[in-house]
Image (cartoon, rainbow, N blue to C red; front, side, top):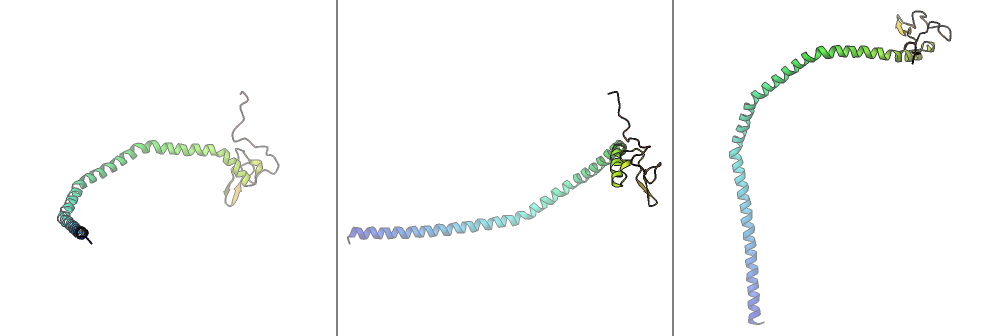
Amino acid sequence: MSDFEDWARELSDVLDQAARATEAWAEQTLHGAVEAVDSLADDIEKQLRPTWERWAEDINQAVEPFEDVLDHEAERFSEEFSELINPVVVPLAGALETWLETMTAPILSHVDPMVNDHTTCIGCKHYCGQTHGGNMLVCAMYPYGPEAETCPDWESHWGQPDNNG
């Protein structure tokens, strides 16, 4: 081999070794820096944690009276609202219940006779259908139900249709 080839090979080996040494140094330096930063972060956390916890506790103590006041005011508002609304809502609810019972009475007078096998009584305003002392009362005129296919006292629950229309 020539001197130039030897020199080039030696130069390449030196550069290779320098690159490996530089890479190892950079890796060690970076690893050391990461460890140092982690250690610093842990130390800062250890130093600041009591302060953060004290701040959180102070904030909670400062906010607690406001929470108590807000709770008291919300409860007072709820009571006053109930006092204001109940006189209106309770009678309306009672009236609604009465209205619903009145409106469903014709439907019930249709359904109950069918269930109780008193088909002659379907839709009759005199139908009772309640049990008293273990005996069912069909109506005041026919306590056990009419004997015939039709009932001479049958009257519509809805009244007579208007013939003027």
